[in-house]
Length: 458
Image (cartoon, rainbow, N blue to C red; front, side):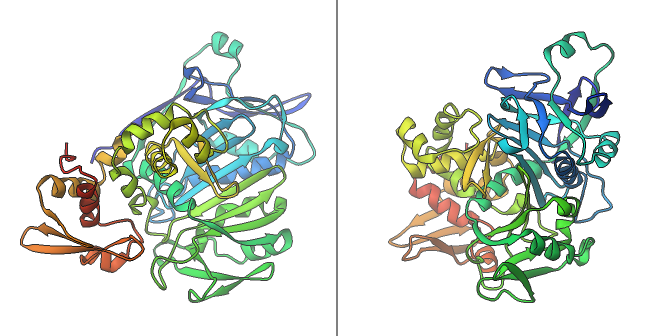
């Protein structure tokens, strides 16, 4: 599969500038979308960071993840972080090159001192001189933050632009989609005070690789106790070395919150989890895939929504109602659109496949952003969904009362509907994952036929 190539065009490199009034962190932007449409170099914020040293360390942590590959680390990775301005906060996001770690820094209203942030999404340049400048920022001096150039700089800056051409693998796009589906099912599982948070995170290994292990931790009072097996109440910690980027912010930590699913899909199965360090006016969250060798791109959590009847049309309608809200209220969208709450949630998931929706476990809410992806790409490049549409179009599905048969070549798979309405299958995929990595192609094909879409292979 050929990879798309994204060209980032910056007016100049991002940098930390020193002057008589202190330091200025100038983050240069490339492309993006806002309320008035596409903008070459948007400006989202100008003001001061209330906790300069903590903010600098947290930005470095996001950059660390963007430059890392936790699986097969010898391969190079480098993607510029995404920043979304939501009116009351700035969100910086990145993915690791192996697509197994998602990092997000939320700089909240208490962390900003200046005009309210604008609205929109863009990429910001992160380079080695910038990283060196951030590492030298101390707590005792003011730090001015400028996200994007002002209008005068755009019109008067001379010289060539700085361009970066980077491959955007399809699995990186699908990773953005899968994380918002997975984290939307997370609960707060542990909440540690600063001292316990620092103590626990300092015990974790900083290196791993192919020999990475999956462990579990059990909340015990206001601390976490490691365990070698998934006992009741345990939270999965898959590849603990993948939390190494959090080491940068430990001296600023106010606490640690851990999020995860209520229970694993199958007894003893590994599961994704999110680890949020609370900082002054900020939150830094790393979300880990269920295994260090397993990126988010293969989880399959978006497949049911992609296959849902009318979800494409519903997504187009819901997209017109979004405006970079830091918290999306599905009930309000249902009232505005006239759709049921279930259809709104399916539409949000579908928009997530184009990178337009994220999820923040701390707020227990989705948020809006816009990434340079076509809404149909995730569906077009998903082999299970393509295979399911082909089965439906080939009339390979026979529906029955609580039981459906799907003919594949010279054998038949049976899809049963349980008492809870959930579907199960006799195929090897279902036997192995029990729905933990999304539905199999046979379950998807049955859903398509039941929805009256056998022609959907177009």
